[in-house]
Image (cartoon, rainbow, N blue to C red; front, side, top):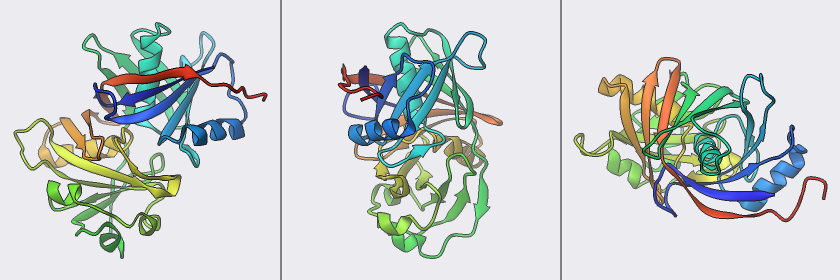
Length: 275
């Protein structure tokens, strides 16, 4: 069984967010425990598993994502990585539709090498700033927003870009403040630069202290910053150590996420679901 490691939301190896990708030959997923063991072995923020669906189905492929600790409802970078593998291997062309726990997603490849994901926009609800979150982050929080059921994050706005970059949070303390993780964000220091806002994502509840580039979080960051900046087309920089760019386009109930991806490892998984 082929397994690939793909760096997503970047056009350079060893940057962006790495994801494991396994394209399965069967018409169904193996046992959940096997999928989880593989994801734990790969030990990246997500490993994607996909199998083809029959002609006439609502989508082309079924898709699931696992962190080293659990399955998640929505993952942007591993979807981008999966679409990249499908197109790079000639298995698919044009637009690919995925059936996932969060609904039908699509990925469209472009001539410039980018791929655009079509995801549901996360509903943002302003909430009171939780007691203790500023202490857990080590920074003053300006506002807080819940992101709804599929991603289950808390978006917290900080004073400026440098505050986001300087975070050294107490990740154990952060687990008390959201279902999945905390997205810290601020406007770009230079409004005329190559990106409009910055973010960092911390997900200790699902086994990831800091995620390098979180595509799904941008389904919440896009409406958050579009409302503040007055534009529907934006670029976000996730300011992790690996870093990555996500171009966002807000389309009402849908958000388009565009980025590059590059395969860095292509190998063979020496085990099968029946072993």
